[in-house]
Image 1 (cartoon, rainbow, N blue to C red):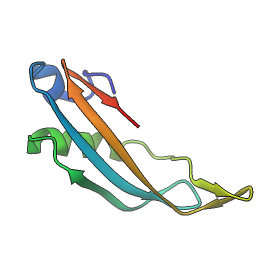
Image 2: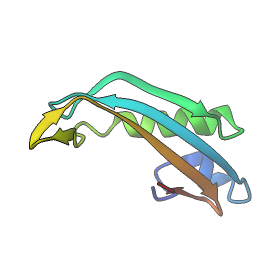
Image 3: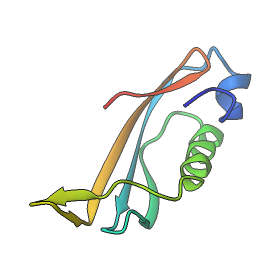
Image 4: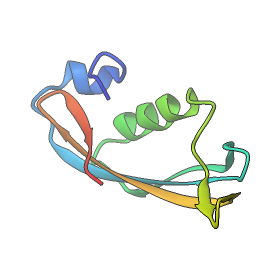
Amino acid sequence: MPNQTISFAKENPTFAGNSSIQFAVNCNGEIGGGFHVVIKSGNDTLDNEIIEFLKTIKTWKPGMIKKKTVDSWYMWRLEIKNGYIDITN
């Protein structure tokens, strides 16, 4: 995620932390149940900005079993460092 999307990361380039966000994607590629912070980054503002950014993505790739789409759980592990947020998994 580029740092211009998340203002906290851009405004606090010396902040470093890790976060994990979990969410469900239904078989139609839609979020079901919202986003859940599993591991907090160490800053609530940053965690909220990440969630708000993820809400702007309207279509997700659902899981597949035997060539059929299925409801799936995803967890993104994030590293925040030098004003950037990297997805580490």
